[in-house]
View 1: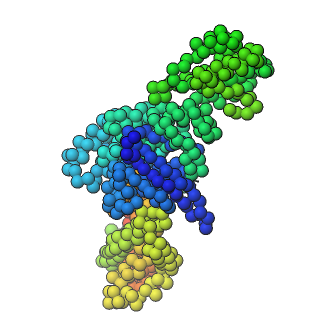
View 2: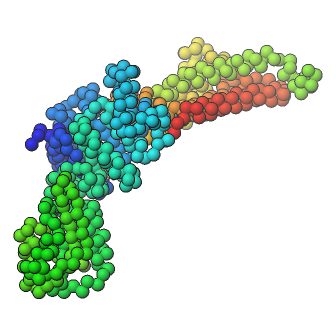
View 3: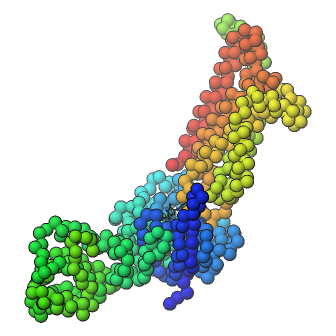
Length: 349
Length: 226
Ligand SMILES: Nc1ncnc2c1ncn2[C@@H]1O[C@H](COP(=O)(O)OP(=O)(O)OP(=O)(O)O)[C@@H](O)[C@H]1O
Ligand SMILES: [Mg+2]
C-alpha cells in the first residue's frame, strides 16, 4: 500500500440555487495511489466532474480535506496553488483548445511562466508533440484538426509541466469508438511510460474496462461502490454498478434477444446466468455437468474478457435435467466458485 | 474646373474650412477613440472577470461598474453634452470648442465600448478559461493571453462599430461649438441653405466610415483562425 498521491477526505460540495442548497458531492473520500488509473463512473449529474475539479481546486469544496502529493491543497496561497496545478494535468470532453493559437502555441502556453528559454520551450513542445504523434501539425490551428487530434493536443498541453497526475473528464465522450480506443491506449501508454497517475471520468464502462485498475461508481453525489476493476466486475453489489457492467459486457442486450425466443422453460429447464473469474473455462464445466448430473447445458450467450490479465466469463445457458439433478448441478457450480443465478425473464437481472 | 464650381458653388470657395473641419473631426475621433478605447477595454475586462463565478469575482466592483455603465448608457448624448459642461470646464478650462467636445464624447463612448468589450469577452468559451486555470496560469496571463488573444478579431469588429458611432457623435458635439464636419454641415450648410456644403461634408464622413469598416473587416479576417 503506497501513500495515496490524491487523498480526498469527507468532501462536500454545495451549490446555492435560489435560496436552496444543492449538494452535488456528499461525504466523498477517495484515495488514488501513484500509478493508478482510477475510473470514476456514473450517470450524468452524479457529481463526477464536480468531485474531480476539487482535486485542483477549480471547484472549492464546502467542507473536507484535499491532499495532493502530500500537500494540503486547501491551505495553499494563490501562487502556491497555481504551482500545484501545474503538476495536475487536466483534459476535457470538448478539448478546450485556444482557437486562435497554433497547435505548438497551445502546447507552449502552460510553459509561459516556467522561466524556460524560448529554445528550451520549443524543444519541449516538439517532444510533447512527438509523444502524441502530432509533430506534423505544429503550425496548424485547432479548427484544422479532427476531434481525436484535438484531444491529443490537449493531452500534450496537459503534460507540458511534467505533471504526476492527469485528470480526464470525459475526454473520449465526444469521440468515435476507434478514436476513443486510440486515446485510451495513449493514456495507458503514458501511465506506464511516465508513471502518470490518471483519474478517468467516464460514463462508458467500456473505457474503464479497457485501461483502469480501480473503479468508483458515483450516484447522487456519493461513491456507492469502489474497488479493483476485477472485484467490481466480478462481484458488483450495487444495482447501478451491475447496470454499468451489463452495458459493458452486453449481457443486457443478450437477454433482451433471448427473451424474444420461446425457450419452453419449466422447472426442469431453467435459464441460468453463470459468471466466473480466473482459471475456469466453460468447456470442462459443461461436460462435467453432463457426466456427473446428466444435465444438458445449451449455451445461448457467452462472453469472456481479460481484465488486468485475469479472465472474467459470462455465460447464459439453458440447463435441462431432472429437478434434483439440476439442483445438484447448480450446487456443483457454486462449489467451483462460479456465480450462478437463474435469469428472471420478467425483469432484468 | 467650371463644372465643379457649378455643382458645388459654395464648397469651392471654402476648401480651407473643409480641411480644418475634417482635421477637427479626425482629432475628436482619434483622441476619443484612444482614451475611451483604453478605459472602455479596462472596464469591459473588469466587468467580465469580476462577475459572479469568474476569475476575480468581486460583487462590489462588478455591481458598481455594471450600474454606472447602465446609467451612462441610458443618458442621451445631447443631454450628456449639457449636464457635463461644468466638468468639461473643470478639465479643459472651457466648455466650448473642439477640445471641450472631447470630454462628453469620451464619457459617452466609454460605457458603450465597455459593453461591447464585455459581450465579446463573454463569448470566449468558459472551458478554454478553465483549461488555462488548470495549467496554473495567473489571472493576468488569462486576461492577456486567453481572453484578449482569443477574441482579437471580435474586438476589432466591436471597435469598428464603436469608431463609427464616435464619428456620428462628433457631428452632434458640433452643437456646442465642437467644430468638425458635422458642425460645418449644420452651421454653414443647413443654416445658410448651402446644400452643397451639407452634401460634401456628408461625403467625407461616409468615406471615413467606409474606410474604417473596410480596414476593420480586413484586419479582423486576417487575425481570425477559428
Ligand atoms: N456551478 C454549479 N452551480 C450549480 N449546480 C451545479 C454547478 N455545477 C454542477 N452543478 C450540479 O451538480 C450536479 C453534478 O454535476 P456534475 O457536472 O458534477 O455531474 P457529472 O457527473 O459530471 O455529469 P456529466 O456526466 O453530465 O458530466 C448536477 O446536478 C449539476 O446540475
Ligand atoms: Mg461531468
